[in-house]
Image (cartoon, rainbow, N blue to C red; front, side):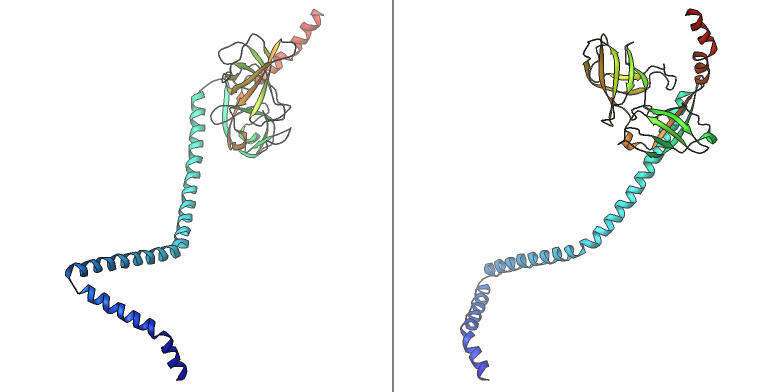
Length: 285
């Protein structure tokens, strides 16, 4: 009891002050309609702010659930996007095949099973093989029709291709709009660029100029896009250019390809390396 009295005695001044303030505010509020309206407006504004704060707090604690819903929605959209991209890739492949029509080239589509870009000897494996009509020396192109490489071996169900990103790769190339040709190879460095070597000093390559296939190698149809001129330097003897070519094929994102067979390939190979040519050369000697 003594402690309670002491406590009341210690705070009675504060209690008295608060009581007087309440009485004063009540009297002031009832002194006129104007003051009553102002106090009511202030109290409503404070009440609104408190309600807004309370709503923000409740919204904050609901964020985890909302984030979960958003993540599920994003996953659904990603799945739909993947389906759309797959359908679009198949559609582009079919359009490209249809555009080729009847010619000396036989065309089929395939999907990439494995691919590497960080080695000196890179290879690409596709899900087509001898059972599907795949044979060695078939050209491999991107769905947009850019050079990828050519098939070097196959089994019943799979085939392995040597891409441009292999230091053993060789193909002939030319500058668009010109008759100057050279050799396409890879130096084992940048997976986005190849070397266009032995280009005549009269070629005058320009940055951005297209580099195309010549058709001389028999692997690729003529005028297939290889890439674009990035830079060009003259060799030490100033007899030829060495051109750096930005590749049109993005090997890091390669998922689908087109396989192209030159129906005349074997016939040309037999003719060029046949007994008739050897006998002719022996006669000339």
